Length: 290
Image 1 (spheres, rainbow, N blue to C red):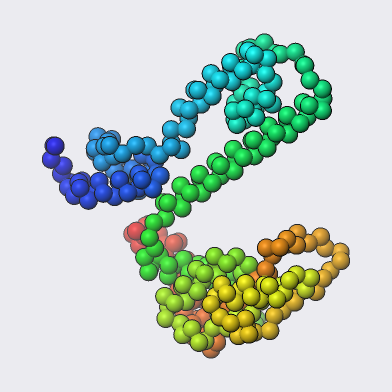
Image 2: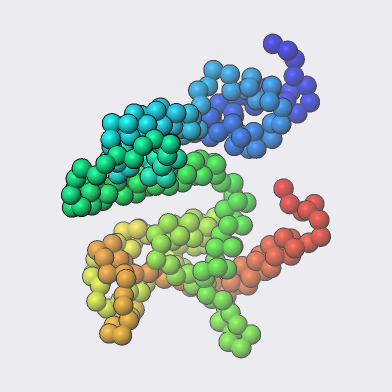
């Protein structure tokens, strides 16, 4: 093997990283950008023997789909039937077979409508599969969080979703409210990073009065690891008959409010950290960023 110099000197260490990213489902471009490998020969050697993830080879698979779609069209199949059979979009089918003769209508409108419905359902399934692939690929790009990553993320998270003191109403307290359990999880992880005493935390549910309040209280208590009896009094939102509520499904659990008792000092630090982030982000040049 040819010797590697410069920033690629630790070739084996770099290869271990590249292989791990490949097996996590990243494309060559993603790995190149993540590891800052701008030499294609080096990248080829780093990934030697590692097969490409299935999602990156998907465009090649369309060649077979195209051939099959044309074959079915020549047999007199409609776009709807081909869509159901192959699980691809009508727009792709139209592009692939537009030069072929249009088949005569041989079925009733009801049958055609049923086939079209199944075709649309197939399209929705494809869209959902693509959505899940994109999200999985994006999730794999995050990797491990350092304490500093979590620290900065928590400051921004609090400033976006937490209570804030106003010049006309000084309320220096730490209160965070959210309906997303994952947001609550990250916020509590951030408080642990800051060494906030867990005995200073108070939790309360905020929910619409027509919901299953007891179930919501149990859910949130379990989520944060406390007894339901330890929750503060639940705040009920009164029903307004003039509004058209959308959050009426069984998984609606309202919001959880997290308070840090005697949190004025922590609040002032959070505000200072936030304006420190703003100052660093807007400073001339990028020397302060990594």
